[in-house]
Image (spheres, rainbow, N blue to C red):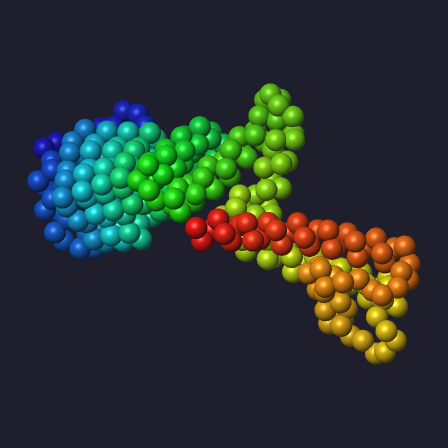
Length: 279
């Protein structure tokens, strides 16, 4: 069959070779094959497994895939507009520069992080929000709460970009929603990145150790103490082990109370974030 020229969308101006379901089924029997400039538009395919297949500059728009497995497949510049993946399984797949606009994944197993390289610019804000909100909904309906929370993480990141865009360029709202989202993302990764909290905790303990050694060397008993002695002193205060026995100065008391307070907050956030991550 002769090639067709795409008039609009991600592959606008390119010529693709149409494939029917049987041709695509035959391709699935060969591992590590590359499908280049292939069109599978408004068609259906079911009960097939693709292994190590690379889809490059292809159109799968408005097609339906049911009980199809994709293992270690790569989707590079693939149009997935309104494509429906029902009861499909994606394992170690990547999507690069693709357009999964209004794509649906009912009862499917898919890693939301595989789509993080699909949209990159602010002109794709609405598409990205629609993608990750749909993934969150479909994964939650399928009972995959952990993957649903991962989709929620990427949705929150794009929502933060939207809030900044509204405040900075459209002046539709104040900076407070964006700043609050930025703080939550930086501290906890919206509850999905406990490692962020460990970084802030270590940074605060180390920073306060420097403060105690530089400005309050008398906070420890007289002796030849190195930096790690002050670091351990800061660690004990951060973890609510206790203050110095005597109030040696107002500045020292303020630093200890501040570190103790922020320590309680960060420890509580860490416990909550780890519990959410492991649930």
